Length: 107
Image 1 (spheres, rainbow, N blue to C red):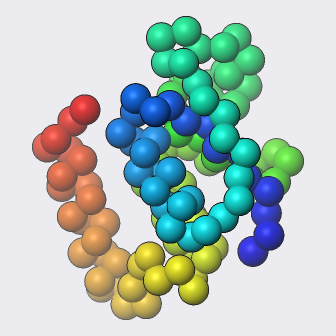
Image 2 (cartoon, rainbow, N blue to C red; image 1 turned 135 degrees about the horizontal axis):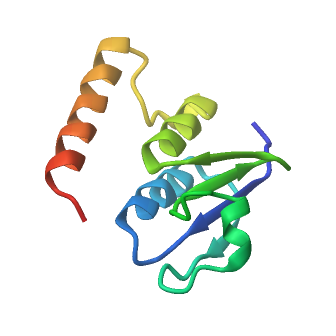
């Protein structure tokens, strides 16, 4: 995979950190754009209408939002990274685990 990535993030957002860790683990190169969550730039609504981070621009026009979606996309796009199991059942258990803790331990 050789897509160009632009990663919109904030150092203060744990959800953005989840996607940042995934980017780091797969070894992808990317442009990082830090978003000040208390003073969001006017143009950011064109990236994510909800004005949340993280967001990942893939190529020139496709944009993904939500850390779990971004992380799953990257893991599936870089299968040699071994970030996810080849077993559908084990991947389902992983999703449950992530959702369970994300729902109970809100930032």
